[in-house]
Length: 312
Image 1 (tube, rainbow, N blue to C red):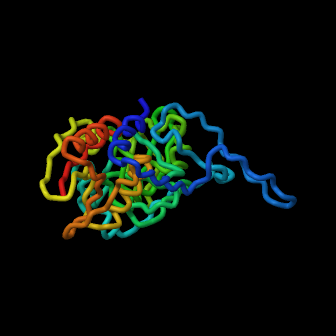
Image 2 (image 1 turned 120 degrees about the vertical axis):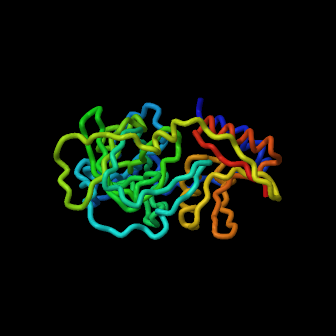
């Protein structure tokens, strides 16, 4: 079932006659007809022909003007960098708590890798840097920001080195979110996701050698656990679904922007609410607790999200 179809009844019930605002797409429209080149103008290489087979971002893609040779884009080169001041603080998203690692020296894990592309291009990442779909970067829930990892696709033997500068993915069963280019080089753009192996890489470290010994990753294990029940926090002014809580507003805004691209027409109901030293990403309001629980169930079913119901 289409995941947006699951949320349509919620949108109609909650928004009434209010027309939804369009989601801003900073990329170009796939399939658009480019104007004929004028004499002397450079002729750009057409967008790669990609056959999608049910990927999570199957409506995403490279736009009409990708780099001339995507495979020639170099991997990230590990270098010594200080940890980001805010992006490595503990945080909570969709009812789960995350404690970022401060040292990924011996990190090795296997899990599902996904990708994000044009819909996020230019948006702020958790590090504060703009997301570049043609760069060699990645999002991970707990690896240090910034840090470097080698990601391998055991299905075809390909591997890339990327720089972790963003948080995510927050969908059940997913380990890492690669840039569009990194996923292209690993050969799984059309599938949307695939099994990958992730290993930390340090500055000056030799990448050649035997495959790493894989260990269980708590993020992948946590994603497979049953979703916790939806607790309710009593306050005033309506019912909301709380999707994340951060000690820094930039991180909250980065999550809001990411979820806005995934929730489609419901994006207009996303808000960042500040209370004391916390910035909470919430979806709402809903008319009552029953409607909020129904919405939470639909989000869990269609997106693997486990929001907290709050009343304020």
